[in-house]
Image (tube, rainbow, N blue to C red; front, top):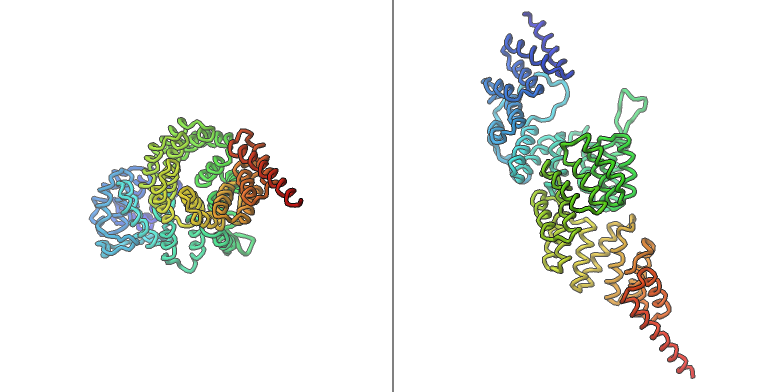
Length: 544
């Protein structure tokens, strides 16, 4: 057979693989490899076998070739076969010895003398070393060695910033703290043409910075222009990209702007109904807004389309949680964790379902598991702190809240809970400091969600005898919600302490209109009426 005929057959094999005709590809690749015995043709045959799901046969073919220990392509594909076969220890052995430090720097490797035969690279490639680091990370994660997994994922994305999967694993599985995420992104070396990717990655990480900082990141990505020959426009942008809009929806959710978040995710899911990251944010927003019908529809669709995904059963759990059937919700959250042990929302859901029924020990157990599995997620430690506060163990609560603050220093919810804990132990100056810091972080998007924080700040200021400032915050709270007993009672009591009896009586009445049997307001109203009448008599006596 002439060389040009063999080359035509190679073209047929590549075309079969691109058209997913894997049996045809395997048939012709086997014949070409038998004729030429060329390493590149053996590799093509192994790749056809791999794509056709003949993992054991592909591994045998690669392992039998003498070049497998010298060519990184052969070794990597052999390791991928072992990954599919779930033989993780053998996978690591095939990838070879290497060491990595906690910053993702590979300090020693025996792979440095290996060859990499790049026969077909016409387009830009992802660094093979990055792919190998990522596979090592997956193997270590499967073996539940999350420390090594984290280090290898960092090594993968540092070896080549285009290895998005490594960064995705680090972010989605909460393997890094907020500070570590920022440090890793700043250490990545992007090519000049990839500067847009640097901006995009900065939108993927947790978004608890100041509002103007985060908004600036989104604007920077949206305004990034791309020259495209196929477009009639001179520049195209990522402004309407679904991944970017899903990041923005996640940002709205983190800031407590649930209506805005739900509206954006609803529009996105009309455009791309199977965007799973957006689906998760949509479920979270629907939960916060109490949209049980939407949760029911989402759960039905997800379990039909993705019965083997943890997200589907998590959606079912969210529906039952929303309608306050906590036993059923917990059952489905547990099913989600059995399908994917590294799915953070399900573990948090289990803890919250137990906490809703005041089953503190079981809730703590779920939160501790989440904290161990996801060291970069501050929510489990935050919830553990909140559970300790519920049982009045304030010293323990402070320890866990401080730990949550270390992981994610700028989350306003952590700052709020630090203020609540300080208030309970009568450290009112500290409490006021944390409540003000919370409001500073969410100043321009103050919603009804943060009304309790405003009221708590007013309570702390009242305790510090800063009555005028306290009144201003009570009034601010009333602009957010007009049906809060605590706000009216606190405002009335503050006026009462200032001897402004008429205002105090007015607000005691408003509080009692919301809850007529409130003992504190009933007693204080009686006292205020007596004080007012006494002050009236005293003023008449003085005038005489």
